[in-house]
Image (cartoon, rainbow, N blue to C red):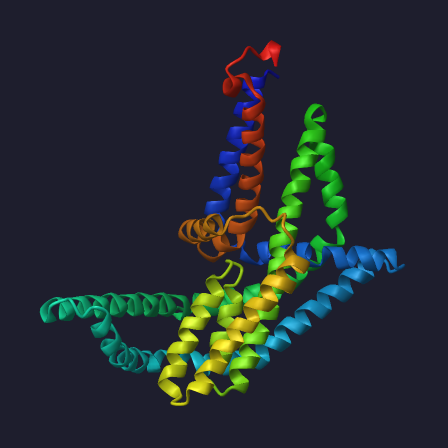
Length: 356
């Protein structure tokens, strides 16, 4: 087969895969979730095998333990989170009104050279933007929680994901070896090298960053709840959950917490303690958690991650969001490989290929 036919075959195969992914996106969620969990805990299964446990026993133990802990945590947290989401949504207009009252004198002092009409127009525009943003957020939440299909999808996810996880984790090494045997022998070393880079990227981001998010979310939620901040559990877990984007989770969590604290507390010491929780969290993340758990070989720029998540959600909903980071990692590694090949080629150096 000529190089042109090989390229054509790979392109057609990729297009067929993308079309199938889009068509079947509604039923893929539990399978992708199961594969993600299997990938996450595969190193632990390998370690248990080294200690003498059979692969099947290690798989069964890890699958059972993972989902017992996950479902147990959800059963404890979900009622509290549901009530806090409802309470927070009802209090948002109050927070916004009080913050606007608190901020207007400060803005008036900063913008003292602006005319009264311009100032009113500016504050009105800001209020309108904030109102539309809150309205959009409410619509998104309403769409996510409305419809009977959500309950069906949730039940399907809970029932099928453990089964998929068990079989994928048990046969993980076999599947990897089987796929490796299908690789074209002429290029097998190059493909293995790129797959290794993709695995390092995913391991650093998925395993490492997920651990960082979990630890930070737990720390923020406990710290804010101890300080008595309203909706501290919700804000803390939310800030930890979106901490996979460096600084973004802490900035959002800090902003929301300070808005609630300024409204709730009159003592500046309490407000300062709320701010201190995020300062300590950033110190822990920057000096201990990220260097130890993630490392420096992730290779996924935060902007690229945000774009991938938004694009995946727009194209395939929740399934697209779950696939966004792995696909972003694959594309990132392939782009870097292609760029390296280009920099070595005559196209870049403008010299005949037989002289390079």
